[in-house]
Each structure stands twice: as structure tokens, then as C-alpha cells.
Length: 294
Image (cartoon, rainbow, N blue to C red; front, top):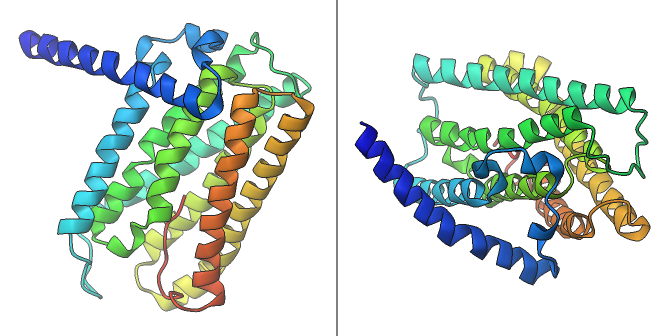
């Protein structure tokens, strides 16, 4: 077993040595900055697999290949077919876990900013606030775990849910927050992490209720009527994030690389989520399909 581990470690080190410089050069080409010049103090105290973008990039590549293969070979589940009991249990555990984890992250971040008397906007980064940085690291790693959302969709054969919006959001958000942790895990960045965690408390609570409702129309009508407002909540989150990133660019209160990245990123999310909202709730073209978006 040790020999196999050594071989795996050797190939991983070679892969990491090839991927890491390419990613950093790509970031420099896009944003005009070599972020390796100013890694955060919190990052420097972490093991190499967190400091390097290779784990995030590799996870995203594996995820993308998985999605492409699933779209090619997994057929949509026939209407009315029930899921196996074990899969139902997995879905319940997954949703409950993310509700609890998201509540822990949002509550923990809010407690830290209250304790340190943070401003909502305009808060300078303080590298001495290690507890906040640790929460943002947990938040960043949680984005990799959330790839399981898509795995569950494929196992359930709900292939209509595996949309470009869903997959783009999962892949992009993990890389965005890895960069944020690399440069400044705190300061202005607290609000985006806290707000997104709170949105996920609400979102995964909705998914939990949906998972126990089965096809009971009375239950869904009574407890899931607010799905439209969940999407609205998500869109408002992106509006706030975009406005905040513009503020950070103008006031220079946060990393200019991340502020610029945030503006562009929020534009893409607002465009995609806005289109999803119009198609689902205004045009009526797919109103019967519940799509997880994250």
C-alpha cells in the first residue's frame, strides 16, 4: 500500500508542478497582477495543497468531465419513478449537513465582525484576525463539497437540473473564493461569504423540504410556495455583491484583483440567473421543473 501511495504522490507532485505555474500565469494575464507576490498571512500558514490552485483546478476538471459524461450517457428518469431508499437518505443527509454548515459559517462570520466592530462596507483587511480567516477557509472548501449537488442530480437521473448555469456556478465560485482566500481572507470579503452562507441556509432548507415532500401536491403547495422568492433572494445577493465590488474598486478598500474579478463575475451570474428567472417564472416555459442552481 505504501508503494502505491508513493507512486500516487509522485504523479501528483508532477501534475501540481505543471498546473500551478500555468494557473498563476493565467491570472496574471487576465488581471495584470502576479498574486504570488502578496499571499495572505493566513494562506502562508496552510499546507501546500491549500496554497496551490491545483486541487481546486483539478476538482473542477474532474467535475466537468463527470458532467459531460453524465449528459452523454445518463438518461432522464421516467416520470413517476421513485428513487431508492438509500439515495433518498443520502439526499436528506446532504441537505441537512449543508444547512447546518452554512448556518455555522454565516453565524460565525457575523459573530467575528460584531466582535471586531467591522463596518458593513469599507472595512480594511486585518491579517491578525485569524478566526475570520479560518471561517473563510472553511467556506472556500465547502464549495468543493457542494459539487456533490450535481452528483446527486445524476444519481437521481434528474438530468434537466444539470444546466449550464448550475455547473458554471459551481466551478467558478470555488475558484473565486480560493483566490479571495489566497489574497485577503477578511476585510471587505466577510460580507460576501456571510451573505452567501445565509442564502445557502435558506436554499438547502428548501431542498430538504422538497426532498421529503416527494410528489405530494398538498405538501408542496403548503411548504414550497416560496421557491420563486428564493431565486429572487439569490439575484439580490448578486446585485449587492456587484455593487460592493464596484465600491471596492472606487474606494480601493480591498484587493483590486478580487474587486475587478468580482464585478465581472457578478455580471455573468446576474445574466444567467436573470435568464433563469425569466424562463421559469415569467415566460412559463419551464415552470414545472424545479432546478437547483446554488
